[in-house]
Length: 222
Ligand code: DC
Image 1 (tube, rainbow, N blue to C red):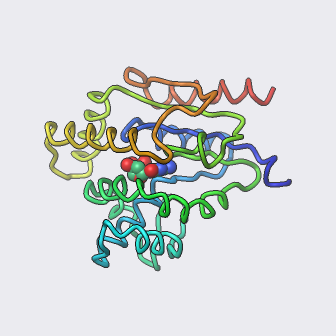
Image 2 (cartoon, helix red, strand yellow):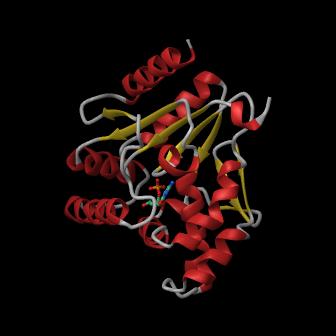
Image 3 (cartoon, rainbow, N blue to C red):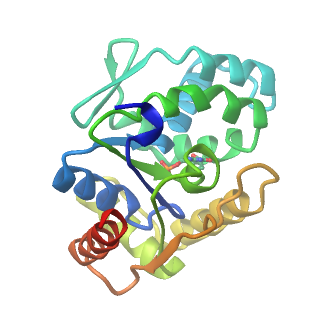
């Protein structure tokens, strides 16, 4: 199957919109591969934080991104043989990822790695610019969103479930700051791609959202 004919479902949206859960389930249902592009930005951020890389040094950060010694096995994320699945989910890592993602050189360095996930029989790609930049010809593009309150609520529950203490006010502040940065950056801003189906999941369960995406996909391949 030539690569450009392998179907891609691009699922973009803001942080804590539930797109990770939805994208994962859609991939499972269709037997497709799954790309968590945010994990690549988080891995770069984690490496930079651990190495003490200057977070304003675009060139040094891009170099880290270009040679990211990472692999994905099942739902585990591995960095140089270390399982960093939980470590990359820390709020500090997410915030740093959002900051370094504003650098064009970092985004450029991660492009090839992301394109490499397009393998038969298909790919569900989750991120911010999957439909707008990385896979602009994806047959289905979805922009998953939810109100900032619904998202803060979900993040709060996730953290409490993991035994991590959380403060709603801080979460709301962080989400707003991250939305602002992701939406207003000059390169690959978080906006619905042309032709994207917008799905507001504020009052939907993950399964309802999955169903909707599968319905759209069935219509696309008909
Ligand atoms: O989806 P996430 O929260 O794991 O992503 C972490 C950060 O990475 C996010 O705040 C912005 C950045 N990111 C990006 O700029 N482009 C992507 N395709 C995915 C993530």
